[in-house]
Length: 117
Image: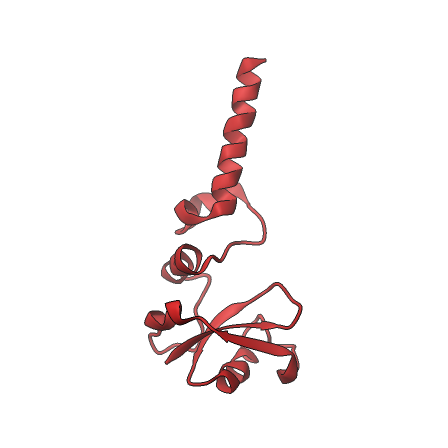
C-alpha cells in the first residue's frame, strides 16, 4: 500500500492516507477531517514514499497516536499550527519538533536577558 499526502488545494492542513493509486487516495481523503468538506476535484494527493512502511491496515495515519505523530514529525516534517507549552511537554515528538525547540531557545534567551539585566 502506498502513502499519500493529501490536502485541499490552497489549504495548509494535510494528512497521510494509504491507497493503491492517487485517485483512491483522493477518494479516501474525503473521509478525513482534513478534506471531508472538500470537492473531490479540489483534493491534491502526492506520494509520500517515506511513510509507506507505516501502513498497518488503517486508511489514515492518526496525529493523536503518539507513534504516528513521532513518525510524522521526525520523518515527514509535520508540526502543530502553534506551540502550546502544556501540550508540547506531553508530545511524543517534542525532541524533533522545530517549533517547540525554537520556543525553548527563545525562552532560554529571555531568561538569560533577565539575569543579565
